[in-house]
Length: 155
Image 1: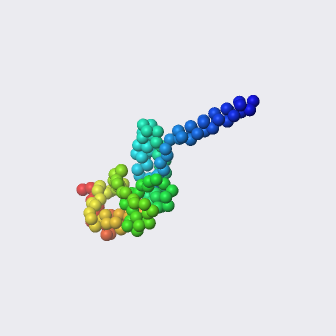
Image 2: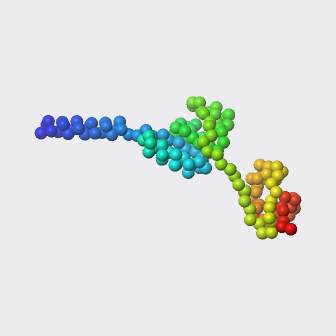
Image 3: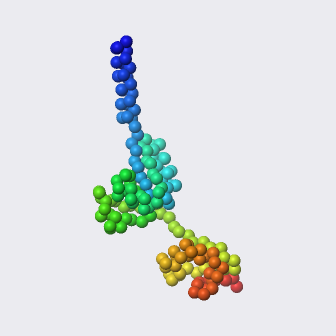
């Protein structure tokens, strides 16, 4: 009986050790939400081919930077590169490289307005922010006043 118990414990120990040794590597990342759909596909395919699992949390660029600086993830993703100040806080060197590119497209639907002429003046950072955050393009008087010269009404 004693021999049987020892063999059972030895086999159990081997099974536990083998399962620990066989655990697939795990890489953790966090950051920008924009690339998440393609990252998810890439990481799934990579896992199928290599057995390496990549866990990515799309928590936003700021969250990705914060977690990289805190050392809680192996990599981070951000819409723009880290500032010199942020890089100075890093515990180890940070390597920036682009992975996904995208574009911002402005759309509008204003009755009676055929086109809006976008010029450097109308799309300055301040104006662009105002267009999207204040509901400016939803206002019926968008093409009156200051911005009237940028609206093209049908002939």
